[in-house]
Image 1 (cartoon, rainbow, N blue to C red):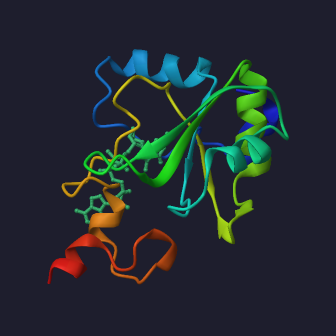
Image 2: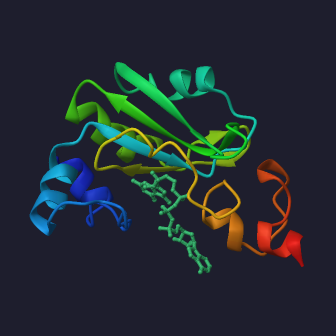
Length: 151
Ligand code: GTA
């Protein structure tokens, strides 16, 4: 990890992917070498082109993968951006976390690496898990959380 990222984000990531299948050492190695970042707290209406604009500011992007509701196959508020270099991925985390996109402060997190299937929300209703449980009203992300809506 670069010195810059260590200063700004000492615990490389707080997130742990429950579906990662390797050992602890595999997890640490993937996180230490990956060129992929996770982008969270997006509005459902934010488009891939906007993310190319924002994340292209720090380096060349190989690919952006939009997070999709697994039932509807529509954007559900997250994305992965894959860079060509580790340095660019680290700079995206260091410099772009908290950037406003469509008036929302996005969350930029280092990710262990995109594999097919990870683009789908894991919540029971198809979107992200956090959108099942949250209690607030968020017009950019479908209103109330799914469990509140079901009440
Ligand atoms: N690198 O922070 C992240 C991240 N997140 C949140 C999701 N992904 C992430 N990757 C990185 N960093 O590929 C990735 C996942 C997957 C895709 C969709 O995005 O690896 P998901 O959001 O639908 O499901 O993932 P995930 O990540 O498996 O959900 P998890 O970890 O259970 O819960 C996420 C958050 O939901 C929790 O932090 C909490 O805020 C909330 N939550 C979960 N369970 C509850 C509960 N019972 N009650 C209240 N809140 C809850």
